[in-house]
Image (cartoon, rainbow, N blue to C red; front, side, top):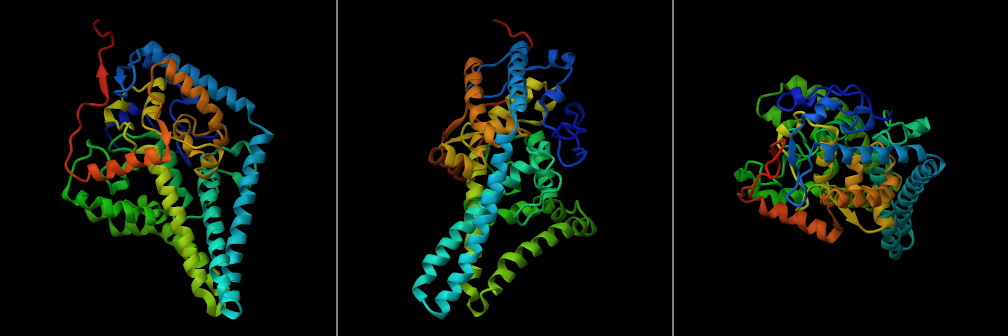
Length: 426
């Protein structure tokens, strides 16, 4: 089993505090191992999850879930050497592009400083691109997927989701809590999913407007550039501290592991590596900064395109009450957005170009998502469910529209999630 047991109970937690995860992350609700009881599913209310989709009754919802469960089990049974070979090749690519990028930055700075100034831009420019590529592949296709436990079945310590530490300012333990547990358990549930605007941005009209949001276009740009640092402090809950809901001692305890990880990243990228170039350290330092900025902006764009497009839906806390397996699947489907682009796009996004499939099957290896997407899309068509996909320019334009539009006061046009009568009249 890739996901650990969770104490999550929608009937008790939807309107209350969130339980601590049993270990590294909650198992996704809706998985075959976590199917709700038939009695619970039978009495689950009908709900409208998207204005673009047909409302399913209880039987249709559970049939939809059963087909997705079967798809998961078929895929899990097929896992083998091809999947292991894929992640090991990604690991090698991350390692060698990182070494090459750092080496070119140092060599380029020294060569340009001592002999050939004209070689500074070609060598250091290529070094920046290779280092940025290494960091993108590590964060997106390697670390994110490994930390979801997608390769725990290999029994290889290199790909152990419980112990992997990634190349970013934040700690893996914090990510496993805020992302694997909070985000994947409470996906797009307002007041529960901390990834909805990350506490900085108003992206949906259901979020209460404050004058602070008038400057959110500027804040969003800064957040994109410094994304790894925003992720690093997300689990510190600084807002609670500034509101007097967290003591200095509690903040200090939470800060210790984050501070250690930040110092390690700064020391490696911005101190030790530039020192290798001696007096010609400046191009190396600037190159490391630019590589990290490229990684940050790319990651921000991919994540925002997967969650905050025009058709992405958010939900009130009440949606968790008596939520059946099929309803969990529908919430994941309608809270996610895909990107079209082919194999290169899939690799560079860590296969989060298939965000829908990732939210449906977070424990399956991401290299399987492209094939799964064909079947999921056909299944959605049969059940009358909207499948949100589009090119990156199209999806990102919708994200930018949300950032600009909801910086100003706005109201939802209509309730997006409605409890319907169990037997609606005809």
